[in-house]
Length: 431
Image (cartoon, rainbow, N blue to C red; front, side, top):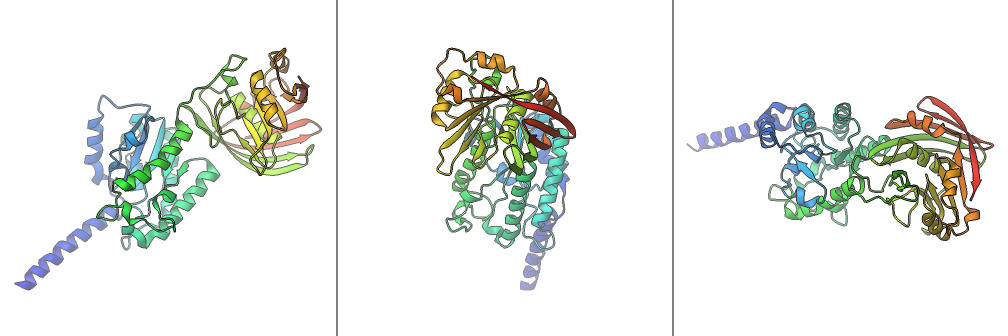
């Protein structure tokens, strides 16, 4: 009798193990058809188009407080527990596209690197799958920002922690090099001070978060989304146009509809003796013209030196479009773009050692708006412009991923942008 019982128990265990291998082994997207249908039914006729969409596996599905945790951003969470990257790709047409999201936040990969013998994927495998998924999203939703949340290191999968950290490192590097995704690194918030997995953040299964875990998981995700997607109030300068708003770039907040552009730049400024290869990640705001963004990139390159950075603020009184800081953090160069008002120039000139303006507009009209206004050291402010039509022609060649060669010799600028070759003089003006 005892042998029968033991045999039955072993049969049950074997069946359960086989089920786990089937579910978490190869991709079986049809196993999630019912869950997908439930989501379709839940949102039928009332799908919230234009939200930030959260999609992925159980770490999102179980995140029931996501809407509150990510407020004031408007989000929709359609996570499905157990899904792998291939499953998310299989259901892209049904899960993601109908929502027409303004941004996509993805958590996937945990179930690919699952620690099960013979079927657990490597970190490199996961990265390859993520890249294919992102390419598919890009084809279907061009211009939509994609945020990829780091794969969580969990107690139950500690034996494959090395593959998880490898995947996260490779994804972070790819994000930084390509600009295809924004990588949200949650690990620093979830590990102990000595870098170990914090078991107190997980439930009894040692795989999924408890409330304390989500309290640590949510803030870095919210911070990244707020940085890049939160609506901000712009201010219009004396020129009376949206171009007077100082836009945020890289680490600055992005307004609704902002689009990330990347630039691989070969810079050879013979006049200044500056030669370098630059990788820029620039957010074009919804209120910003391509010509204005192109001028910002030109200003950055033409002023390039140690400590230069795009502004972290949008229309803030204490940050220009581009600035230079020394190693103490003090602002040494205040670099405006477009047609800033006199008050901004006055403030910047008092704060920094030098102040400059790069404009794609008529420099005579730009300077005229400052006539009679109080501007500190106005005679020391350099105003730079380009040949008529140059910036507009360069802007017409812009893409989301750009390859650019910029050289300067005797105040003549030579630009190759994505195969379009242009030249312009760099014209200097005084106030």
